[in-house]
Length: 200
Picture 1 (cartoon, rainbow, N blue to C red):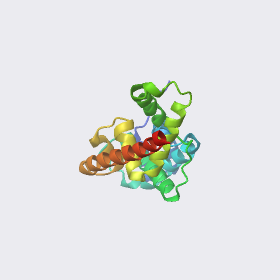
Picture 2 (picture 1 turned 90 degrees about the vertical axis):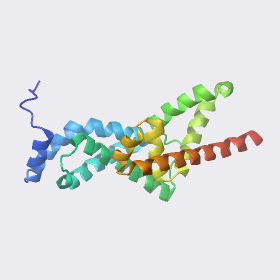
Picture 3 (picture 1 turned 120 degrees about the vertical axis):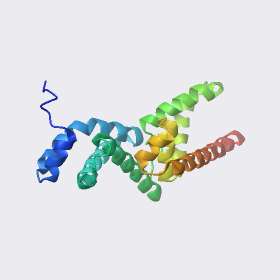
Picture 4 (picture 1 turned 30 degrees about the horizontal axis):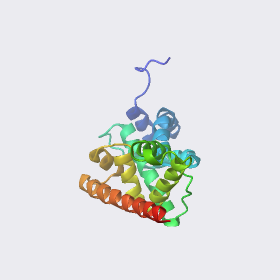
C-alpha cells in the first residue's frame, strides 16, 4: 500500500496538468472515477453510465483552468457530474425519446418505498410494482430536465436545498421554487393517469 504522504494531492496533480503534463490527468481520473460513476448511476439508465462518466471527465479536463480550489476537487467534479446528468435529460426531453424501461436505480428505490407505504391495498396485483415503476418513469420523462433533476436531488436523494443548489449551480431560491413546482407537476401527472385508470 502506497503511503498517503507520498501520494500527490489533487491540487498538485492539477498544477502538473496546467503546467503541461496532460498525462497527469489520468491519475485524477483513476482517483475519482468511482465517485463520478456513483453519481451518474443514480440519475441515468445503466446503458448510458459509461459514456456520461467519460463525458464528465472530458468536461472536467476542459474546465480545469477555471478550478479555483475554493472547494475540494471532488465537490467540483461532483457538480460537473450532476450537470452532465441534467444535460442528458434536457437532451432527452427535447427529443422525447426516453424509454419507459429506462428507470435509474434511485427511482426504483424511491418507488419501492412509495409502493410499500401507500399502495398496500393494491399489492395483491402481481404487476403493480412494475406498472408503478413504468408510470413514474413516464411521468419523469414528461418533465423538463430542470424539473427532473431537482426532483431527483431533493426528493429521491434527500439532498438539502442548499446542496442541490451547489450541485446544479442555481440559487437556493430557484431550487426551492423549482422543487415545489416540479413536485406539483409530477403529482398532477400521476393523479391524472391514476384517475384515468380508475375510470377505465
